[in-house]
Length: 197
Image: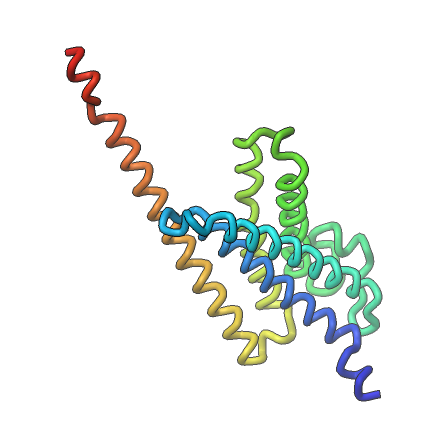
């Protein structure tokens, strides 16, 4: 009986929700780290961690969603899980979770199957959805998740948000520096151009 109480669906829903957030956070973080020049030698490893954690996140969030269908405490209907803001329980926060799930699904699906079909420019635009998707997961988990009142879980969210923001800002600064270098290179006449003049 005690074992059943520990591993009931409500506990598992929360567990898989937190696990999916952890995996997606790792995926977003390592995806950005793979763009760092200083980590170029580790790019293949970083990409594998990025990809593996994305799939682990998708698998765990699917379990999270499926358990919501059979939960006796706060059950959801299938349409409530797939149609944003249609849930009877906390429609706004549930809807944000649905949108985050659908955006993540579209990114993973197009990344593994449709890069050549869509073309890299369009694929990159779709891939950017990982950021609003991750933000949606933060809002959904932090404000709807019952474990957010737990001090350890609360700090888990705070620390993970801080890490992602630091990496994101560092990535943006590096890209800005790279653009400046490219512009400077275009403006600086080459030796061949000077010789011709």
